Image (cartoon, rainbow, N blue to C red):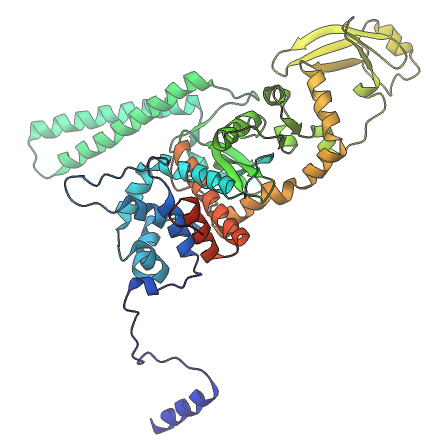
Length: 502
């Protein structure tokens, strides 16, 4: 024992060692738990200055009954928890007991995990509108201009297993099995009633009967969705719907195929702040551009000057909806994105005559209208006389078809050519070169730093709420940096809200 004491005394002279027997006192008030530059103060100030009516947060000071937790305090807990990488309600409950920043934020309140979970589930709309108010605040502070917008998407897993995706036929088979099981359970109930057994087994059977009835109703609801969506998707593949979360879809990513949502963001060019975030069930981005730009316009209250996205958004039907206004579109076609050199005798080397509605090949022979592909929205033009192709010196290079050369023209071919010309302009190339640093940076922060790689809430509305909170946390971090620190952030946000004058 004496040797141990001697060793401990020698060690404390060479190293800084802690002591569990040291008597300390916490500050006298909770407000002294965190410093003035602690990030939690920024989140507290941001939520505090929001108008509850603008984010649809129900606050009733005259509410009767048992006292509830302050809705703003609960909102602060969810938003700051997300910024801290804590999403689960049980982990948030633990943080309110152990983490000084959370204790300070909640003012000592310690809601249980069920209360936290219920608040999040019942306030999805509030969580979505917080991002809108954050974007508008950034506009008033001069951090968002709204002139050049970048649109991008990423796949985030839903709270559902890919093994729960079934086709219409599989659901009908399941429904038949459940009906048989319910029939057997009813027969068992009748038999037990007749024998007047009181061993408790009847209670278990009735509970299983209720569970089977719930599953049956859920499957009937999913089968009704097949009527509206159809048994096959746009690519002609048999459609499947997830039993756990019918609104998600099977989506492929670098991590494989999973039940997921397609998260979309609209990012401003000036400081890379997010204006709008969304979660959709469509596996591809091809039909998203006009809708996302329109929702960003509703947030900003004005049109943007330029809308920029990658080739995944290249769809003439979508681009036409935006092109009608004063918005310049910077979206490459698939050919431009892949940087493929044009092959000999590609379509660009054929001349289209609008008056005659035909193409002329480099040798001067006409290709007249042949057929129409409605699904692909294309018109087919074929050489008028196949013998001309077979006798041509370029046969085998231009085409190998015995019927002669065929060319496909989009319904909106003129618009496609216009967008391609716009993309090749030097100004457009400069804008597009900034796309990755603007549009893809937020997803890196949301997925890696905030840990939002899967959603907790089920249904599209829940997914939209979660991605909106993640986008809000990203914006607040950027605002703290841009405004010069937490203290400057708090002062300028409070000044914006008219609480103080600086």
